[in-house]
Length: 257
Image (cartoon, rainbow, N blue to C red):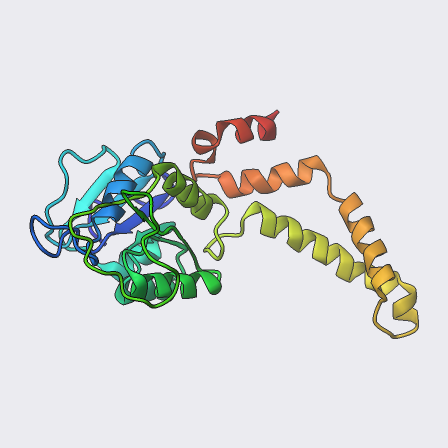
């Protein structure tokens, strides 16, 4: 692990790998990935998180936000396992790195093959994705595997607020991550109540599965056992050491009061 990487527990760590910003100097073509870094600079500059940028000896904008940390040589697997979320361009290597590490990812695909990777990762519940648009407002391309043509100098754009929201969701409510999120904890408790209630049900006495009506009653009883203090505790547990208070101050106020 590079010495510059902060230790776990301080605040969330995002591993950003945008691929090659420009494949042809002075031109914008279909495979460029500059939009990934550009959107993230706008979206993550004020987020209470550390952003490690895998630069790959590429020229980066200067200056970068204070919470951005560029690395010419980034150990991908090590950083992906250390990171709380990964943002990348949807290449095969990046996609497999995030999957192998079990780290939730935001994928910003820059052409159709990468969008296919993004859709497949999202279908597994391991990622979410945002497809950029061209500057004239048209979609980058139709969903599917049709190749994107050379864009003739037309750049791409992506609303940075969408990126901010997607990354915040990955950090605090990941699709599949290293930590349980409040929703998973709540559902887990409800399911435990429902399972435990079987032992005292007529269905158990008759040694049969519960009917739909009996399950609905069991669910209602389980829900009544869940109070505000329980839910708040799950949000606090998820928030400990992860910047939840700063990222979502309005939600935090409802938890602590």
